[in-house]
Structures are given as C-alpha cells and as structure tokens.
Length: 158
Ligand SMILES: [Zn+2]
Image (cartoon, rainbow, N blue to C red; front, top):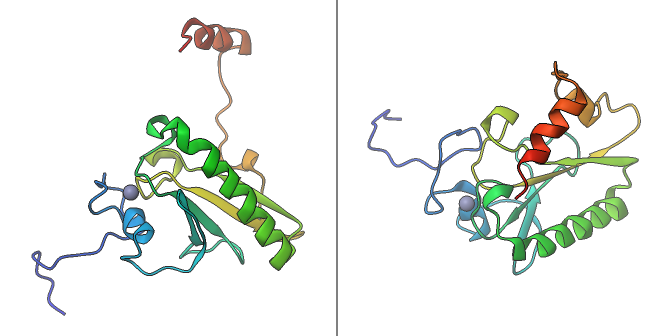
C-alpha cells in the first residue's frame, strides 16, 4: 500500500489531535458513518463497545452533540446523558452479571483522553480481575495543606 500523504485517512482512536465535529471519530460513529458495535442509542446518546476493551462489556457512551469536555458540554444534555449511563449500567448488570463497575471520563489529553469528544467509560469489574480502583490512577498528593487548597478554590465562585 502506498504511503502517500494524500491518502485520506480515518481518524483513529489513538489520535490525540484536536478534531472538529466534521471529522471527529465519535461524531462519525454517532452518525453511523463509521461502524461500531452500538449497544444503546437514543436521541441524545450513543453507547458502543470500546474497540480496545479492558474487560468484557467495556462500553463507551458519547453524547450526540460534539463537546470536547464537560466544560463545553451543554447543561441541557447532562440529564439525558446520565440517564443513559444508568440504563446501560443496568443492561450490563443484567446481561453480564459483573461484581461491580469502574466508570469515568478521561478528561483532557494529560488524563489519557484520546478522542476530543466527551465520552464516558463503563467498565464491568469482576472479583480478581487484576484491576485497581480510581485511586490507583494517579499518585500526586498535594504539597500544600487542604486548607490552603480549599481557600484557593473558594476564592473563585462561578
Ligand atoms: Zn465529535
């Protein structure tokens, strides 16, 4: 296969580039223009199996509206999004019967966000699956006291 730079390419899950909604991988999945194993969809949300699953049933939920992170996600989309999280979690519980779940958002490149379209991971967990808790994700305890940090945050009320 030619390595020509002119060959149009589909953005991959490992791309860390800022993508517009025009060529955003998850927008394309939402529109059905890129195939995926869609398990759940409604007017606001699409849920599909992660292409690199960490566990059986590892799902990715995306809002249909393109937002890079929670900071630019429209408030009116929050409720339908969280509702879908609950529906999909219940579906996975009923079908795969895991012992629990780890859920969350890689928010920003530094945290491991590889597609610049807000997405929520639902990862089924089983006893002895060799996984850790969210507390194993980062080890960067603050050097300042909690009081100092709280004061910094309290200064800026939105
Ligand atoms: Zn998008």
